[in-house]
Length: 156
Image (cartoon, rainbow, N blue to C red; front, side, top):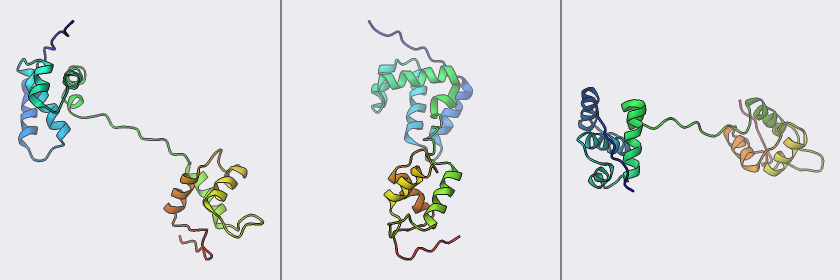
């Protein structure tokens, strides 16, 4: 069973914006391909024909661009939504507590702090619910701390 073709009508104002975008300077390739797909679909072409014309997009991608244009307009069709990113593992107060702990003397029986020791002690002292070695390493690196060295000077 074939899909029903998408009838896309692009307004004059949007066509003008698309043509200006294509004739302007350097643009991201994704944006240019999406603009070309919209213009090609506006001429009455089907999604598979547009995909063959552009050679870089699939028919599914062309259909999704057309649907995004119909739902959210030109801005939504050309550009991606900003992505939220990962939630930080440590809060600023937790970071401060760990840095303060590292700047103090190491526990009894230890000559100096190691990254594993810092992670274990932070959890043991209930400074953080959990902490991995990589998280601690990045925290120390961002504060320019090297507690495994003999002489560890803290700079403000």
